[in-house]
Length: 404
Image (tube, rainbow, N blue to C red; front, side, top):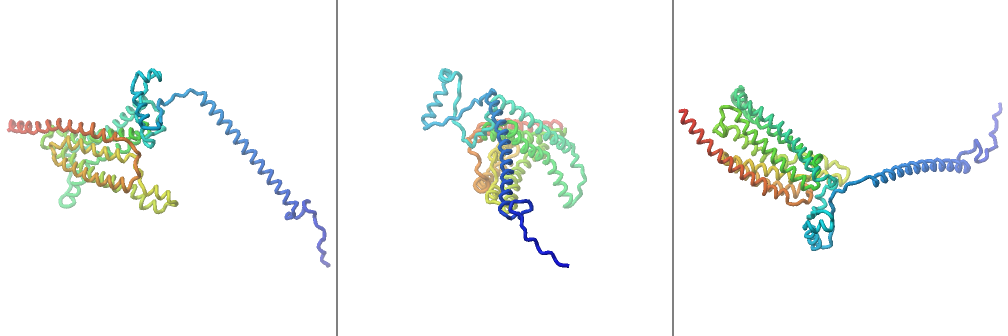
């Protein structure tokens, strides 16, 4: 059989069955792709037009809606003299009523980094209601902590822990130490609950207009509730009928608890939490070297200051009040307070210069509150408690003499 010779005919370019690599096929494919792209672009334009129309309708409804201003205005002046003249004029009620229709108040504006712009719409009355609600929540949280403290101290007062058989030797000593330290755990738990809840409520619920106001609220509430927990824990030992008010047995129970609390704050909280900063140390040593970019590494290497100053000031306020309040009966507290403040200076200098990012620029509200509120309160409690301490021991001696 003879093989058939190949056909010598060819299809014309662009005809069905033609060579797809010929120019006519390329032009047709390009035209089809161009039409598909134009179709997609028309659909995108239609979607964008619909979204823009929705935006215009929403903007028009917002314009027609009635809005209430925040009642605040930030004004920039060309010179400090002009700002002084404006503040002097606005300080006169007759001037503001005559020219503005109502009384206005003017003060030096805080730094831009100190303003929480998203909270300016909250009125002063609304902030007061939020403050009361936040304080009520914190009172419930603190009461829960003090309830735990009361139960543990009642058990301690009933000598339940002392009746446990712990054994002799090194094992008994270690178990006895652990049992005595367990009395402090409710106080530590209560303080941890405060550390977590107070800043969270200040940020989410209270909605302060400035960072300074947030710091001040956090500091005062932490000082109050920490002192409340510590004092209640020391007085809860009086549930034991054998312990009279500030009698000698109280010094080995409630007084020792106050000394242990301050010693734990000076060592554990100040050194481990504020100086070592385990979370920041983990980010610096473990997360930062594995960062993908230099910016991410820088952010992981430096801790955010945030409300660091408020936490440090509240701890100082706690030492001031407790040391002055119980220092008459336990002079060792003065040495613990002096050690804390000496060490605090070095830790703050190291953290603010080497570890933390610069905190927001705020005014001296924390210092004023510490000097004008916390310290005078500590002095007043010192005078009151000194009278109680000095009157309790002679009364106890007289009662023992009469019983004899």
